[in-house]
Image (cartoon, rainbow, N blue to C red; front, side):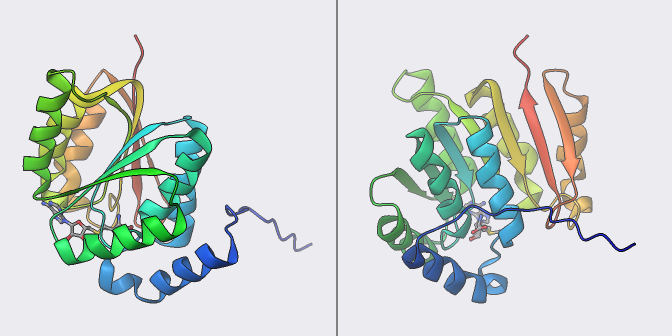
Amino acid sequence: MNIEIKNINLAAFSPEIEEILSGLERTRCEFWNLDRESANFLNFLVKLNHSKNVLEIGTSNGYSGLWILDALSETNGKLTTIEFWEKRQSVARKNFTFCFPNVKVEPKIGSAVVVLEDLKAEIDKNKREKFDFVFIDANKKEYTSYFKFIDKMLIKGGVIVADNILSHYEKVEDYVNLLFDNKSYQSQIINIGTGMMLSRKKIN
Ligand SMILES: C[S@@+](CC[C@H](N)C(=O)[O-])C[C@H]1O[C@@H](n2cnc3c(N)ncnc32)[C@H](O)[C@@H]1O
């Protein structure tokens, strides 16, 4: 007997937001966006963790950011998102404002490591709250450098999702080993899209 099992039920959007998402999906190879299933998974994780203070490294034109914002519209949270390509982030900003005008977004333009250093300095001076969810999707060779800052900026119980783990394993291998060897984190690689590594900072 051939049984067909439905295994996914995607987040639903208004026709206006759906049109923007579908448009971005038509150019996703050019802007290196997540595929829809991975973006839905990210959205699901933000909701499951009830995250309110999300950091994204690698905004591009805002495709993954839109899925994060949908989740944050439920948790009443805020997205801080980093991109060094100004033109891309201005497209992202337009998409964010059009689709989720009531969700807080703080776009940061600059090289990720430099911006992360600034964010950490603000947290150290109590000018900013720690993050409870971080999505890494920028320069694969820099994932370990990002983690050194993220580790100091993430609350206990906070989650890190890193993309391109299986598609670019040779570039992110150091990151994978660093997280698996770190006793303060529980981590697992999920075979979705290009491969995501999920890491949760332990409470105790
Ligand atoms: C894979 S794309 C992000 C896709 C996006 N998360 C999505 O799914 O819609 C990576 C983005 O990170 C940016 N990027 C790469 N290295 C960076 C760095 N060192 N600092 C800041 N942005 C960087 C690139 O310009 C690119 O737009």
